[in-house]
Length: 161
Image 1 (cartoon, rainbow, N blue to C red):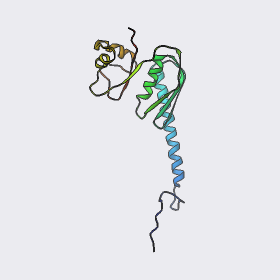
Image 2: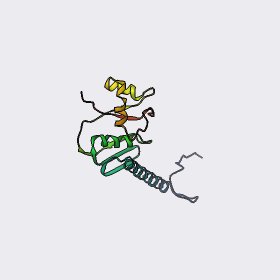
Image 3: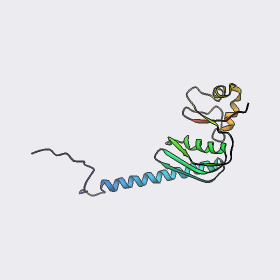
């Protein structure tokens, strides 16, 4: 006699229930429905924040989101990307949006422990008192200049002069 090894989740179902292929198909369908629901929720959030994007479309595939549509301006485009990217479960955003009114692109800053808007303003603008510029550039996602968190990505707009 010998001992033979098999994959217990593969093969015909003899004890009732569904085969592993049927279970996998159900899991895949559930994941797709969850991704579609998350994309719809992100679109709703963007609209609730009154970010002007015509033909907004968000699609999620695993931890990657893609977004398309025509943003009113560059700031709106960047804010939409930040709303999506700063959402739990999203690791990257494929920005396929176009812009109706072009303007210089902002820089992005990932908040680390110990950061404050004034510290970030000092780093980018050489003046800690310019923190309101960063706060305003990240409204309506930020509602309080003291409520930022590590890992959050912020817009740092270009300053003239």
